[in-house]
Amino acid sequence: MTLRRAALVLADTMVAHGVDRVFSVPGESFLALIDALRTRPSIDLVVARHEGGAGYMAVADAKCTGRPGVCLVSRGPGATNAAIAIHTARQDAAPLVVVVGQVTRRERGRGAFQEVDYERTFGDLAKAVWETADGATLAESFARAWVVATAGTPGPVVVAVPEDVFDDVTGAAPVAAPPPPALPPDDEAIARVADAIARAKRPLMIAGGALGSSDGRRALAAAADRHQVPVALAYKRQDLFLNASPLFAGYLGYEIPEAQVARLREADLIVAVGARLTDITTQNDTLPSAPAPAQDLVHIYPDPAQIGRVFATALGIVADPARSLRRLAELPAHGDLGARVAWARSLHEYARELAAYTPTPRPDGLEFGVVVSAAAGLAARDAVIAVDAGHFSSWVHRLWPWSPDQLLIGAVSGAMGLGVPGGVAAALRFPGRQVIVFVGDGGFMMTGAELATAVRQRADLTIVVGNNSAYGTIRHHQELQHPGHPYATDLSRVDFATYAEACGARGFRIREERDVAPALREAFAVRGPAVVDAAISLEAISAYTTLSAARERGRRSYSM
Image 1 (cartoon, rainbow, N blue to C red):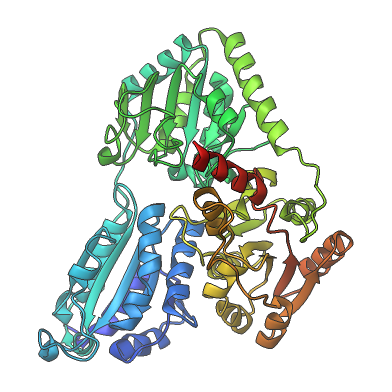
Image 2: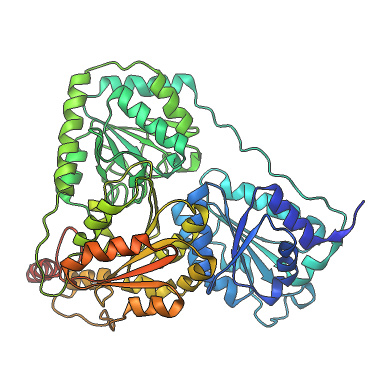
């Protein structure tokens, strides 16, 4: 039996699980693990500037690969800084393993420097939290975290490890990753789905993140085409299905037009595949309606806990969504295909009209749609798009001509700050692909320090900052609820092009419409990180409304 430090066994276990990249801000509570990783060149240790950025990078990496992202943080402040990523991973169903260096075993329970009870702290955020107090079981603990993070609805797992446990000498062997469990669809259940579609005149398929693999995207297209069922895409999942397809029925996002939602509610059957049916995707539990939908609901998802939890479900199928759709695509189409084609055409025509755009001149800057439209025209066919949170992002969701060849990285949690670190992680994961980040000035300033990480890592990405000197989303809600009383939502103007140059990146500015195409072309041609500072209109707060309209709506509400 070979005796080795537990940190080395853990590093070999990571290798055995296919881990090739981890994200971290180094801390003294896990130096032994850092030293072990130094001897494992197959694992790229990416050093971030803040644990929130490191965690976001790990979440984005999980979105890129479908495997758990791995983040290493130190005790106390390091772990709590990473909480934003743990919350996002839970809300986004992204698999994540966070290893936290804890105080030593001797110090536990004494209120030691930076001591935290992580089971209490993260118990409501993570799928599971535990502390490993024996080096002999450290590798086993990581392997268990990997399984829990990927099982059912994916999510974050936190493993706390006392500092001295990494130095334990043990004869334990590295632990290999088990094959993922098989969740084959039941042929009889899939036949019932096909029969339900055949009986419907206005079926609607809602597709979600569990179809994010290339196989899932192909299966979605094949099943929709075989049975002529229009597809609406769940929140932040617009890349799953070709938006130019006549079967594309729209995007179930935040504050989309009520007229669009009303059209989709006319469905006489909803087939939800790979979607958890969250409140935003279901438009505040109205598509379908909770608790009793107006139409039959079929729900296919790999976690039984998600089926029937909010909505009465006529047929629930616990199975792999991609395999289920592949089987559905093999079955012949029946019923009134003409009615379904006409239904799909009406939905697609409305979605296409919604994506049409004519800019409106604004006295306080460009509509962000001008920048987004130009970027879409210049983007590569397989571009990776990271979108931060905020009303500015509605322009991207409305106007970008999404394709399943592309990848959308966004936070279902609605948390600001994912954009820049998410783009860095994507650029590292896909060095041959174009990576574009869309972020507001508020979100950039939360995690923009990771631009320095991008420079250090020679990451190839372009960051487009919609700069309106405000917390725009909050300002919009402020006008709705307290019209004419803006307060605490204005921000000082930051020159992000200068910031970029200070970090060692290239900086560009857009101040007028004539700047847009030249600045984007030059930025996209840069090898390495580039930042485009676009001065945009605050009045044109989103792709669907203005601040003036919100203020007037708020005043009408006050007068009632």
